[in-house]
Image (cartoon, rainbow, N blue to C red):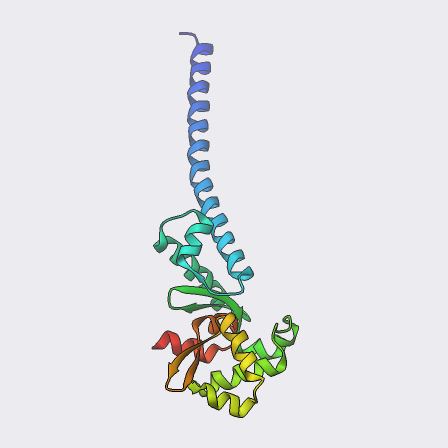
Length: 195
């Protein structure tokens, strides 16, 4: 073999090895990129969702059936916000997750959120039920007047309250959907998770 042939063969082998190394380097980067894209997608979903998201929703969103991996990614996002002492937090409700304003800043920026879809009188009826639950419907009517019947009907339609027959009246309570809708009720959420 001439020196030229050896050099060309060596170069071909070197080029092949370099090419293989580049390919091997690209594969982990692509996997890391996919994980990163999945993490970004989960973070975007947490940001956009007005209610807590379940693990099943994350599986559907990402196409990743591995709930443990998804949960770890969510907890990683949660830790990142906590570590940087952010005004935003990822809050855990059982096996659901929601991104929300930290309690310390919630009152300062709450006015920026869109207004409630309920009138003040409906909101007052809902507040009474929330604070006094379980409460008899007859007491709600007594405290709020007969228009509260319409308020209760609307709140039942929106599934923010539930009612159960008790003698000649009903017992009213807020629902889990109430907690999801009014994400600012952090004390109640934490109590629900703690119990």
